[in-house]
Amino acid sequence: MKMQTNEHRLKMSTEKIKHFYFTVTVSLSCFFLLLLFYGWYTLRKRRNQSLTQQSIASFRRRTNNEPRSNRGSNTSSNFDKHFQQSLLLNSRI
Image 1: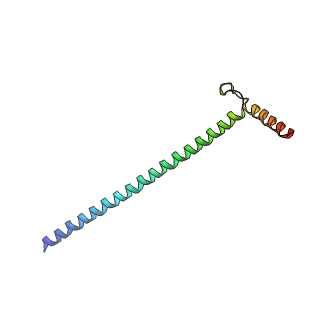
Image 2: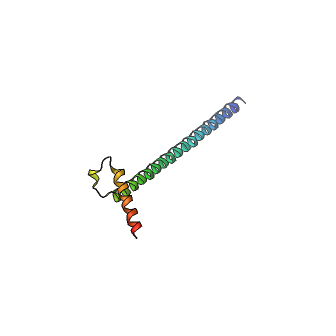
Image 3: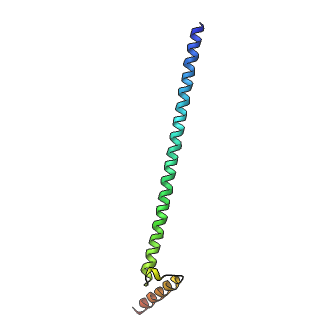
């Protein structure tokens, strides 16, 4: 009788260990999947921001006629000049 209870205890303890390892494995898998998703999301967000900044910079380069090296704090004035010129051209047409 005593032997059966020891075997039963051993069987139950191995079941508990298996359940524990299963729980730890599933928890770590979920954690790493969340970490992977978070990394993908932040990289995507940064890439979209840099693309937006690049498109703004290319728009400014197209609107400013001077080279990039000569640009300083007067970029807004150059943009205003270009905008006024385009308004004048549109009003003549």
